[in-house]
Length: 438
Image (cartoon, rainbow, N blue to C red; front, side, top):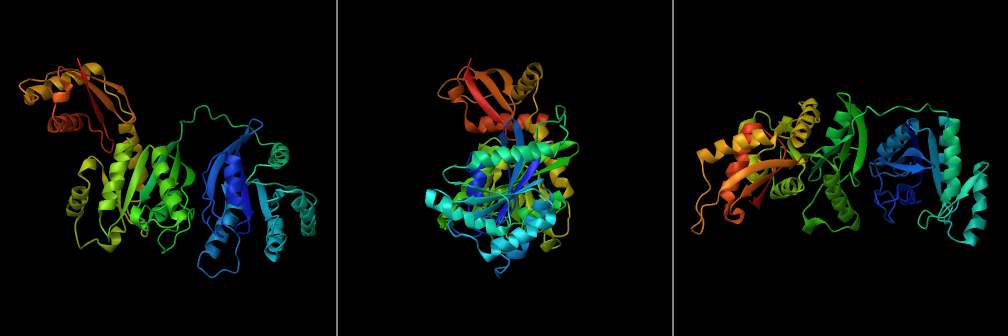
């Protein structure tokens, strides 16, 4: 079983830089501004043949009054409770502060192995001054530089020894299907984190009325119908003209990368605000990347009775006709209405994404499509389509062989796509038609 490790400490001591260093890539936002990380951020790393789950947490700030600190502290407590090892990061430049002593005292209550790490020790002078951290009443600390990667190997050696001492029995997971990745994406404050919490049946994400609360893309694992699922909650996507801060630029980039990682994407729309041009752009991005898509109209409890779902759904698809194949769910994260339908719909979409049709059956269907409507004459020529096959799925991709593939107009390509959908479904899944010369 993979052991869980939490990284805790004051704001701006370098937790996210350390987190990225351990994972080997830039997953968490790193910015020289206190309080950038708010949610728990999960990642995995391997050392000495053993895989660990690492959790980056928000900074302990018991005296702040911005409304986030109690929520962040609650997330940290839950992170420690689910962890087998705790890494307490301290700032070698600033030295010991009263908050460090408070955190050290709080950690002793959990009866977990705690490794005291003094970060930002990037010179011999700082290494000598780091001895003051023995004031915390600890037997050993680890001077490191997360930025430069020095001193981390000694820490990892002892972490592996501590993990081995836990004597966890190995789990045979050879029969477990690969995890399905599902992303929630959309404009800020549409309720993505609230939906994620409902799906996880816990306060996994920090939820606030302030737009843009989620800044990182946060991964959460769960089991649904005996299948492992990774839920990816992303930062809200703004128009480029409104992205001004460096942190927000990274959040948008992270959300786009999350679309790349996911197989199915839930586009969350605020029922009170309706679908916008920006939502249409997001939907186009998802379809262009070949990902399954489900449109979720959240906060339906605020407009229910003022309009009906058929009219509202038609208005939504009018803004994004290129994803007319996407199912639309009307939900309320606040009341829980229809939340249970999200994962079952996503799993069904994944089934459509991975669906393959036998070549013989495809060609029988193609013959029927051609009998109903032949390709129109173009430039004095009559392009013929003689054969179809499906070489791949994720997304379903079809190759059609034609005498003049470049002369087949777009409206006829749409006719063939709609015919395939009418025959085989592919609900929520974009499909690709590739035309080649016979």
